[in-house]
Length: 284
Image (cartoon, rainbow, N blue to C red; front, side, top):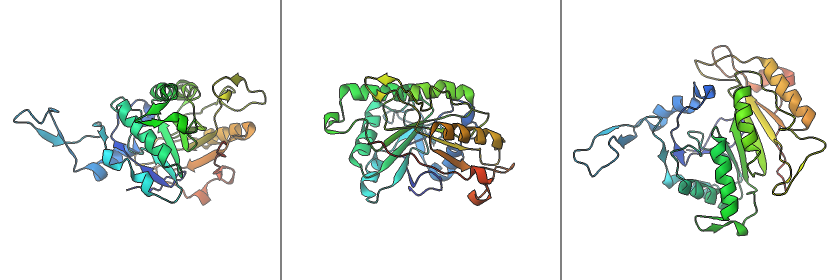
């Protein structure tokens, strides 16, 4: 497990799996479609207590979030530096994931410093609260933050958005979260999104005591929905985001364009003006 066809990363790392829907962007979830093939043999104790006899067993559902402690050390064994998408099959900040387990994930991301870890969530409030708490307590699972650069240089934190409403809700919370790279995945894009001037770099940034200059977005990825039930996206929505990024000097990555039946179009067949795949420069 680990290889992926996701265009903006090299590998996926799933220390947990399973999730629940929070917005329209989740309706045709790719992870949920993939779940039966990858985890179809998983079972759970239906009454959650194996000491009760007789107990019942059922097939695990996608909504059953499972922690995979045995996978935590995987990035330490990937010696070649890679970009790693954290939890393609779940959300690290899901409400069913204990803080102690998130601590262990951050420990691994800190120790496997040869890699870049790309984290995405649709639960930015919990991410903001967790990361700021982590900064304040200065240690996690025995690893002292005073021994680490902060924010962790190899951890990019981002949010997924699908329309203006989700962008308005999630991006301001992301920008209150310490990170070397703050990014947005606008996929599946279901409506136009205008990125506020308060979210993009400006010529006169405001000063913030904790983060230096007031944070703005560092990277935006966009793509249409794929799969048999894919909802259509207007190419003008992507052009608008690309133009907004260009005007603000923010790298833009056009991930995927799909047909009416949800099939991916090869990158070479994209309209020429949307053949753009840029990455952010890592801050020093």
